[in-house]
Image 1 (cartoon, rainbow, N blue to C red):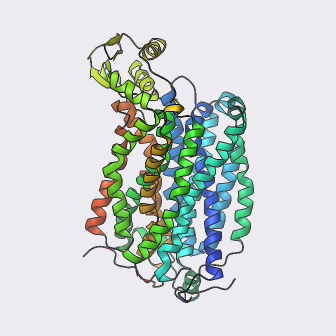
Image 2 (image 1 turned 90 degrees about the horizontal axis):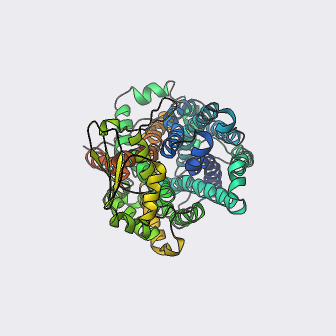
Image 3 (image 1 turned 90 degrees about the vertical axis):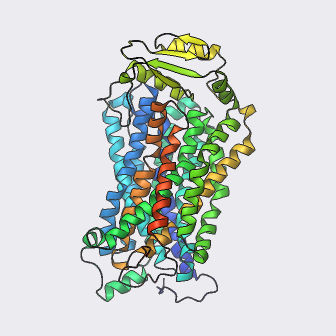
Length: 546
């Protein structure tokens, strides 16, 4: 395949080489996101497979903590593989990342469960999630940089937006494969062995990805830089210890990727968990709703990437953060109203109060063998997993945990008694599908995916344009993966813990709203747009506001 320099192609349409670069880079990245998000999609289900029984919310938090582990390690993958990518090359680095990701995913499908080997099972699961996170930390920056360095300057937002579709398409593919397994297998078979199928088939996707990527040439801009001897000998030092590049890395995180990360994970994963865990909608219906919203919303990644080539990247990203922060509460309240109106009516008719010594009520995030669950914790767990909000009244010194349900008081924590009290008051443990307003529920989910496309569509071009070629892979990867891996990836875990501790099923939304507002403020004050920047130069660019 012939190489090309940025801006050398004629303006009328992409060349065959450009199209192949986008296709090959995007397809491999889709498969890698599919691998990574299989566990994320099944996290609530894995709670029963890989963690001890006895406390559903504790097991769920453990599953989410394992889910988060893959995200927490992503910045370290960005450092490791970013350095290799800036020293050796873009192509070979993301060949390695996809092999690591595919191998770890395949091995998850072979893992024994907690019932078979006890705590060794979650330890092995966490280890493989860490391998996945390291690989993904190197994948995205490589793919985005590779495509951007093949792109013409006035189409960089458009071409890199195809890379931006890959995370959502990978999530969609995971939903489809898992949904097919659950549709054509009974619940017992899926629980016993069927859940392994989506992980095991990833080895086929790995083979296809490696074959395609082997046909790619190195980025022309990187190749020219290496030929001229202008590459960095210490990309980590130059990226994070040299001023002003280290300042730009911090601003990229706080002024762009942190808000983008929480909007992405709220509009897709947290929405899915809210439907299934809080609103009690069955998995297939929830998967279908989310999948449809992804299909309808995905083209808007391209739309906003294209638009960023005309009006700029930053204003679109910050507008998405602003609109999301303002509307998340009414949107999620709307989901409750349209998906499970019986739950909404029950909560309105039967306000719940828990009376306990609050010094015995703990805030659990990372759960494991060291965790001690009190009666208050178990009571909060019970109501949280029921999708019900409650208020907690402090009773210092009290040994009893009591529930007031409407005008009925139930003394002492007892699962059976509290379950019976809810049932006698008219509570249903599942959403009535006959009462779901499918159109309005879908519309709300589509709106949230549109927010995702606003913040995510232009972000690759924005980050690529912030940093010089010799340290671009390293410099852009770290803020991206801290923003998405830490701020975004921690969202389900932190939001679930906040809901359990506060007693408000919507309280978890304060986390993404707060981060989105932080990004909006930092971005408006300290950053300016990067559209039109020449990325072929070896020096950095001034992206800070004057």
